Amino acid sequence: MVNMSLVSSSEQKIRSAVLGAAGYSGAELCALLAANPYFSLDYAFASGGRTAEPLSQLYPRFTNAIDIVVEPWQDERISSLQIDVAFLALPHEASEAVTPLLLAAGIVVVDLSGAFRLKQADLYPKYYGYQHQHPELLANADYCLMEWLSEVPGDLISVPGCYPTACSLALLPLIKNELLAEHNIPVINATSGVSGAGRKAALSTSFCEVGLNAYGFFGHRHRPEIEQNLRRKVVFTPHLGNFKRGILATSVVTLKAGITPEQVKQAFTEAYQHKPLVRLLSQSPNVANVAGTPYCDIYWQQDGEQLVVVSAIDNLLKGAAAQAMQAANVRFGKPETAGLFSGVVV
Ligand SMILES: NC(=O)C1=CN([C@@H]2O[C@H](COP(=O)(O)OP(=O)(O)OC[C@H]3O[C@@H](n4cnc5c(N)ncnc54)[C@H](OP(=O)(O)O)[C@@H]3O)[C@@H](O)[C@H]2O)C=CC1
Ligand SMILES: CC(=O)N[C@@H](CCC(=O)OP(=O)(O)O)C(=O)O
Image (tube, protein in one colour):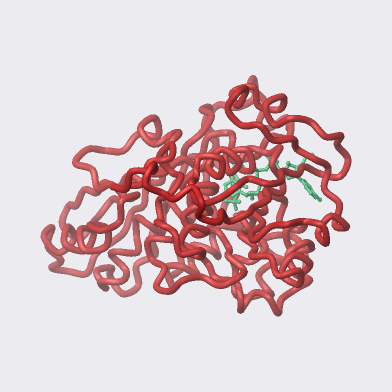
């Protein structure tokens, strides 16, 4: 544990901008950056159609806590920005368009959208509904599922999707240890709170409409991302639940014959014993216990060859802003969890 008062006040801070700061994940990023002793939050932007407005007016919970004005974005601003890193909490196509401009200006990009997550450009029309305009950047993008990252990322960081974070963290220990039956197709059912759909108004996410429903059968854009991570086909069915934030993912797999509970436990323990943001629980996770935190909680139950793994995250934090902050901390050589616990590093 590092006492933040020990961080030298003369140390040069890493200057940052958040694009999409008026949205849910962008606002969370502003809060994390404001609490991070190594970073300064220098600019916050919304779409070009807005007028400038304090973040605390858009989100009153930041009153007297975060003092930044959210300005309308124009690409022309890039040449005047004095920043080291830009966090993009934008729609996928907007991220894809602005990223090459920021990289050309020497600015590190941490992208929260899906624009650079898939390595195969030909998957974008089917799963995202558009043709990728910068396929040459896909190979250079570092996909930062942080607990499984083996190298310091480069200048284009792609932050994993919320559902893929929850279920990849749950299943990778089993897959890396080759515990799954050879032809097993994991079946993943995951429920997200409504903030997963962003702040914009829509009938399907309005208060009186949301109950509990499945959607995106076989064609959700997170399916190829999960399959890319696990190197295995999956059946992934997302659900929308009537709570604000959090994802609960229940993954069902078949193990190879003879795999013991000790082998399963060892796989999870070895994967996460030195990873402070993954908690292996002895009871089933609850989104209420991770909402507002950067943790991923994991639990499993085995019955012979059948294994159920349950994982829970906050979609806006471990599933978006907190994982982006982790990645930026590592990219700039800072403690990985800086800023994630109200200014205390663990
Ligand atoms: N919500 C979630 O749980 C997660 C979201 N993500 C990803 O993060 C990104 C943002 O999601 P979320 O926070 O939910 O979205 P929101 O809809 O809440 O916010 C989007 C933000 O982007 C701004 N914006 C939209 N179009 C443009 C544009 N062309 N140029 C500049 N700014 C623009 C909006 O501005 P304005 O308000 O002015 O319209 C708004 O500030 C998405 O790519 C999403 O897939 C990733 C993981 C989880
Ligand atoms: C509840 C809800 O609508 N969730 C969104 C996923 C959240 C999100 O924004 O997706 P990324 O993690 O890819 O950025 C969806 O299903 O499209």
